[in-house]
Amino acid sequence: MRSPIPHRWRVETAGLGRGGLKVGSAGNLSLVDRDRALAAVGGDRSFLAELAGIVGAACPILLERVQAALAAGDLPATAWSAHLLRVAAEEVGAGPVANTALALEPHASSNDFDAVNRALRTLQQEVGQLKPALARLEYDLLAAEPTGRRADPANVSGMAQST
Image (cartoon, rainbow, N blue to C red; front, side):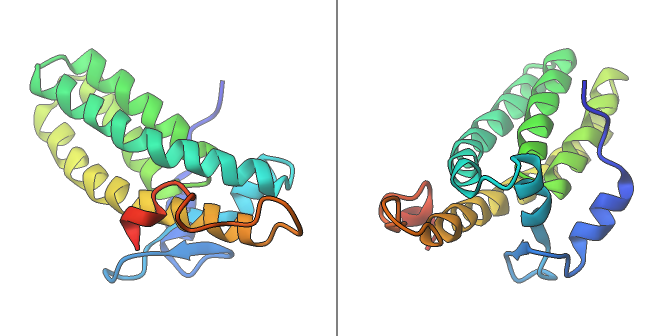
């Protein structure tokens, strides 16, 4: 079982960060810590590129599950869906998304609808910014490949929609 992401990660990734991708105009929030993500996959750039594409596709779906469970008043399912979103975000070094999802879990478990709704609004914004950040990470990693799997923006997950 993974330990929760420490609060300092949120602080580290919210700044200029090492290797993080800057997206959006609101404060240049660094959503992905490239160094952490690469370390998590043993430096395998090709695998991280593939994982970024998978997580980029999965996060909006997981967010929809959080929203649907909350709309149905099913707070245990809301907590579980937030947990799955957190785990996916952790795998690609997306600290802000992982931390917000982590914060949402106990609020859902304690039936605090107001706190869940506040965390959900933040999570919606972060996931909206995460998909293009992960597509850019995937593109950058594939573009650095020496041969074979060079990146084609039309074939990189989400790049066509995010550019």
